[in-house]
Length: 279
Image 1 (cartoon, rainbow, N blue to C red):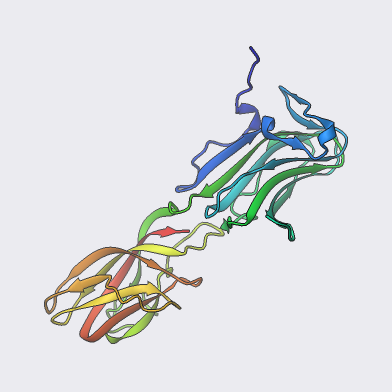
Image 2: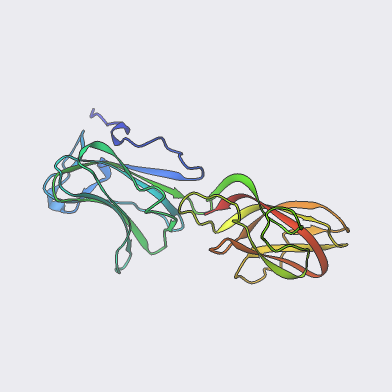
């Protein structure tokens, strides 16, 4: 019975480093040489590219997931140039798009990490193939590769609640439009005061929306800036001077803006706490 090496040689930090991020790992058994005639000279020490060229992995990613990080584990003992690359290759031809690249220093094995800088919110399209490649002019070993991603439909990340908007005069945050909303719309920035990881650009937010100082009845709609009014309510009230809160989702534009709308014959103050984001 052959011995299967453990994941330890790859040297990756523990998984689950970023809340909401899932991980896939590939080992040297998954790697193919660019030149098929070279065969697969795999041994217990890792996959060795010994005469210049490249190794590659077809990542086989499903459409809709969002790539957020990548990490290579490799050695570069000869001093020659070694580069790790993640790239998009459109099905049916077209230009290859490099989404991340990093050079490996010479010396002992170690992880070279692209997390959060060179791969940030890259969404996999239905017509995309993705490859991880290691290219060298000398001799190198590729021990492992790890990809961090947010699954389609499961990209929610909770945060410490932040009061992003309050229409009442004197209440923070200051420097925003104040006053009751009645028979009109108002653009509100919901990333005001929200701290996000580097490179993360949410497409939507989970918020606690509250109304206070209300008219006799009415509703407020909260939806993405730049889109049509969906004609739905995010919160309703039925009495004057009622205080009502509701947890709801809203889309936002690239600047973090949403639209708040109150219809004819209704008015209210309102405030919004952001409790999480979808990216």
